[in-house]
Length: 241
Image 1 (tube, rainbow, N blue to C red):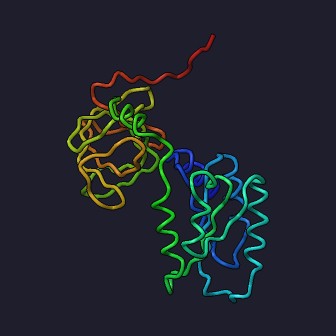
Image 2 (cartoon, rainbow, N blue to C red):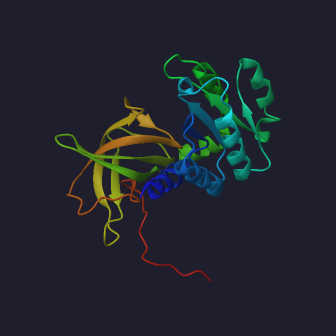
Image 3 (cartoon, rainbow, N blue to C red):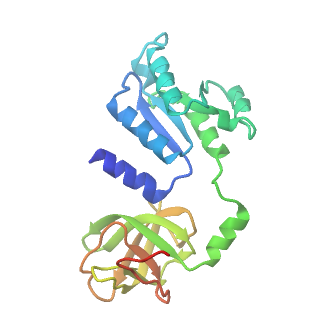
């Protein structure tokens, strides 16, 4: 079940990068399975080794074992421990693809967190400005990956906006239902990173609260929210010649 949930999240949210978080001294089967998923999807990633307070400063066993696992995932990249700001010179545009960055951090003392923060600011989405503008001009399409039911609030779904722009009070339709039908509704509110926002743009994940005119007979992962005037239809099968 864990593997299925992880695969669904990675494929559904289409991340540009993955942060693999591992507790020091705890390289277990789950770590190996996560690396296998990353390898299968070929998504750039970096490693955050946490709880360094629990191991001796002289204990290099975890790093050695981690390096071996990372090399097995990608033999063309070299694991690189980022220990200071000076190490970022190795991660310029020309050399960044040659390394798998590793950050050793402590949530108790805060050691290493500044390096992680700097690295996050260096990352850029795998989409240029022209592509982003073209996606924004298209009709909105929000892919539903998670469903939350909050009493007194309404239907809340989490997912990714793959194209277009979605705003509060926008008229939408949700589907397809069991027979390919779509149900008309209205976006009530949008949240990103637990904060309310008025709109979302392509490649942004969010939680969307919406209401429908008629009660949905079923709401599941894999359904979409599209504009009310969108002529999208569902197909049971299709033939390619």
